[in-house]
Length: 135
Image 1 (cartoon, one colour):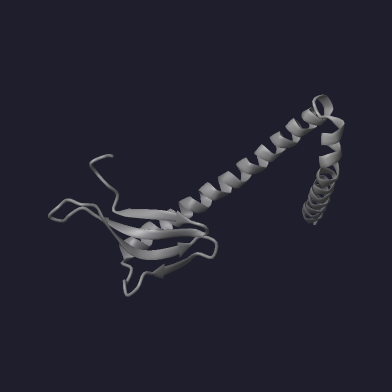
Image 2 (image 1 turned 180 degrees about the vertical axis):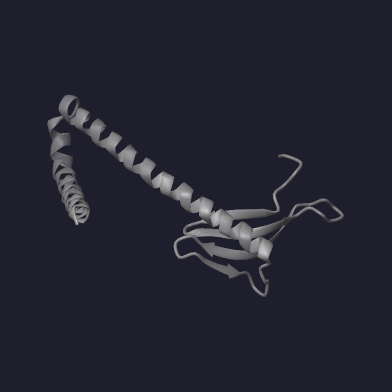
């Protein structure tokens, strides 16, 4: 662990984080973490913990973290989609070269329905984009 700890720690949770102020300026040099807020990156909400009033510095740090977190999550979403494309290609190769008849029988309907649903959404969204582009 480095000798210089950050002033704030963000414990990531489902839609955001719990924010702690990190303190090592005590007699025992123990790491103490005081919960100061809970943040929600989906709706941008910042709730101070208990009776704590957030300082301007704390708000700036929290908002910066939220901006960075939203960017990280967006990057992960796109990466997940590219991974899905890879899985589709691997599934196609498996179906063509390795799959046994009983395996294909087990997964074909679920794959066809999922691919039909995806195709329908993609075609509709592309048509919407093309219509907006021609306006």
